[in-house]
Image (cartoon, rainbow, N blue to C red):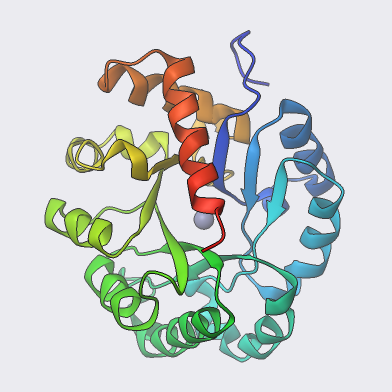
Amino acid sequence: MVENNTDNSGLVDFHCHLDLYPDHEQAVQQAESAGIFTLAVTTTPRAWPRNHELAQKTKYVRAALGLHPQLVAEHEAEIAIWDNYLSETRYVGEVGLDAGPRFYKSIDAQKRVFRHVLQRCSEAGDKILSVHSIRASKLVLDFVEELMPPGKGKVVLHWFTGTKKEVQRAIKLGCYFSVNSTMLANERHLSMVMDIPLERILTETDGPFTKTVGRPSVPSDVAYTIDRLGRLHKKQPAEFASIIRANLRELLIVN
Ligand SMILES: [Zn+2]
């Protein structure tokens, strides 16, 4: 339950782990009945069949096929399962690189997996990827530049925390950015977010990993991010929400 009375339908949560809430099916239903365009990312390809099955019955929820960089140390072999499902979806995520202290030891395996993912997606064409880049913004952009040039697929940088220069580089590479409320609470990240051109911004929650009013965020909580970003850009929430919606439509256009 969001603690406001506004109609949140038509908002966008482009990165949420619906299968990690206590009741997966209910989480999907809530996003659907709230009318939030939700990208249900997954952390292992083993989660794909169930996510796909639930999302297929909805108008607003789409499932993405993932292999999370933080799981690659133990689950690299599952890339074979990921391969088997790729033709069933246009959406891929969560994928990417994590060079933070806890996961740096698997960075070579992560690079193998991410390179493979980008190559396969480029060959297939027209995939949309939600990409993780903790402490690895430069590396991720190097990989995207090499393996997923514009026209081969689209990259949405999830919770990007690179430098302003890297934002400019990502924009030239055609990337979008999905922004959550936790990012806006950090001064450096906020100032980077303000450098993202309005036509490249999407919203996300990364629920249940972020919190809103003290509980795990749910897709309709993107309303808070819309409200905050709208104010920073001197726009009414409804106007800002329609910008995000237009960005989503643009992202989804088949090349
Ligand atoms: Zn995530």
